[in-house]
Image 1: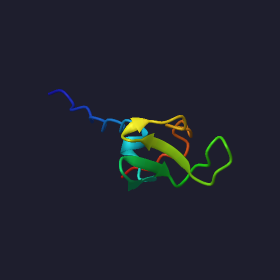
Image 2 (image 1 turned 120 degrees about the vertical axis):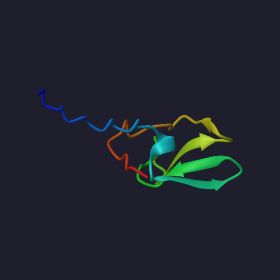
Image 3 (image 1 turned 120 degrees about the horizontal axis):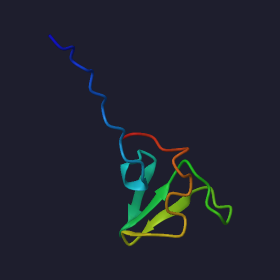
Length: 67
């Protein structure tokens, strides 16, 4: 009888939309409360009117936290 292989759980896809650090601030804008923006602001604007902004996924997954 053959042994059953243990199936691995797939890794979640890392992006701003699947991160717990993404916070809505109104009218389609979202910030990342774990990252600083490129201009030195304490939070990064990652979505602007539901469209990726200049600081989208600025951490490259280093600060990503599962929801």
